[in-house]
Image (cartoon, rainbow, N blue to C red; front, side, top):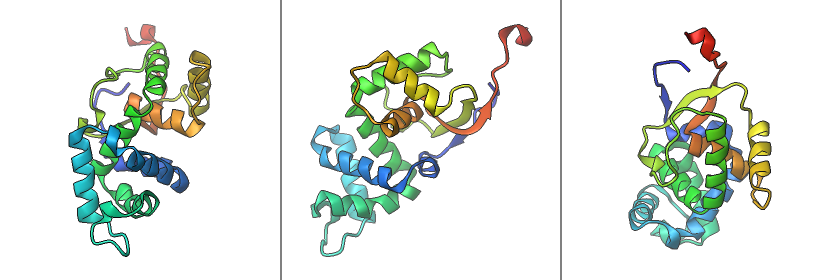
Length: 182
């Protein structure tokens, strides 16, 4: 892996995310705000109140979840902080998936993995270097094999791989054999 750490802001994930899936994630998190930490809940509400407009509502937080999610999607596309809050909160709703993904990435010897209980929203963003041998299809297959009882979509598995691995497949690299390094 290259020695210099380069990061992309969290909202760069939008380049890899379909619009309908973005709306699904926002709807799920906004529907489960009562399960968020008090700090994340408060930050999310403040951002929505300040930056999201839902027609017919002075306070966008009072809008129905579907309309609020649609209004929040635009902010999600450009706000590093909102993406961090939403995806961190989403990952807490899928702890079993997170455990399976962490196990798979650990077995594949991904560097710099953090424990599940760390608040990844506090990281500076996503690393840009992604091991070329680990494409999404292979990782999805490995996660499903690791936990056959897991009932998660391929999109959810992919998002969790990005979040737990703290990487976007921006710069694919070949891993050099250990013998070649020495």
